[in-house]
Image (cartoon, rainbow, N blue to C red; front, side, top):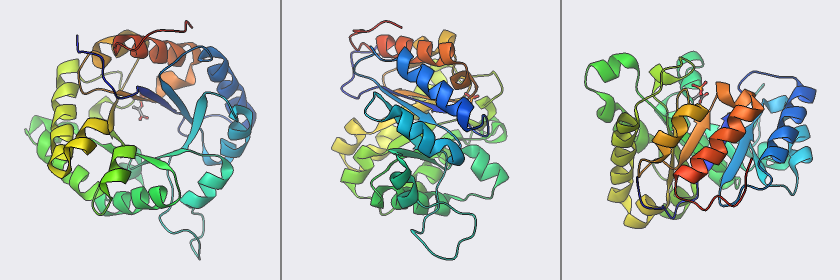
Length: 266
Ligand code: PEP
């Protein structure tokens, strides 16, 4: 078991393309009620674009923050169909996920556009959750750390140390997302330590402050072992975040596993 970390645990539910506006507001309300007594932990939900404003209104002044699942890197202009980070901030977001593997694989996101989006998010006052992760082929070929290093270096280019310390990195092995197959705690820790060491090349303070989330089939029954690893600071949760009890249990168990005082019960 690791010693208690100074980094505050964070759990973000990525609702992907699920739920209409009413469903999303209802799920957000249940999450808010379920984590009302949880302390020393950040809880975030990421509804689809259309539901963001309604969810943000429902969660206003409460303990649960709102994230978007993506953003565009320009603030305004002739970019049909895009949504800017400033618009997301205006709608009530505090966070935005950038570079999720589904965006990289299905929508042509590149390391360069992930960097543009992360910088746009920070300019707008949002905290980016920057996703990195290797495919199964890359892992099998022994290329995991090289791939993560390339993605990370590109994503954080031209981001100041202060901004980087406020940003979050999510390690999400592509082979573990939505597959029911999570990385072992040791596999996650190896990559999280690698990421932190790489951040340390920029600044020891950044390495110490930046929260590194794990994502990939996180469930109530595997979060405790993952959070017991020194460099795992929380979770980016897909499928299990759509089931309110599961998501609340993940936040609660994760907080306790991290050595944070469990002042609340769920
Ligand atoms: C994700 O969407 O980022 C994710 C990790 O999904 P799941 O938890 O379903 O694997």
